[in-house]
Image 1 (cartoon, one colour):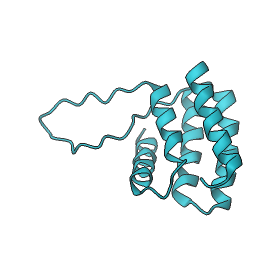
Image 2 (cartoon, rainbow, N blue to C red):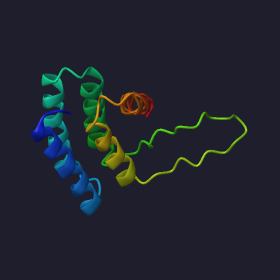
Image 3 (tube, rainbow, N blue to C red):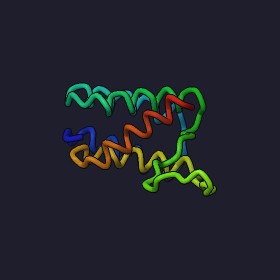
Image 4 (tube, rainbow, N blue to C red):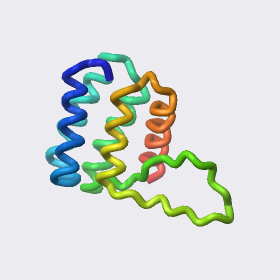
Length: 118
């Protein structure tokens, strides 16, 4: 996100979650504010990601989706894709700081898929 106020909210949320974990009543209102900035910047993938994220946190009182993996999934291999909710949320937020990076955009789309499949 390009707006400096949005970037401040992102960094504050990351610090909040690292300090106190996922607390829905603290995080959800801030994610809703960020979504407004994303609407103004006309970033549809981000708008959707933020809505799905705050709905997910509101329903589950946690951030239960994993960090997207870079490796292709082989059928025979066991996948240990367990990240802490704090780690995954912090990574999710960091993606928003540089939406020009095509990998960040791809990871946001992967998060959107995980939210919808949850």
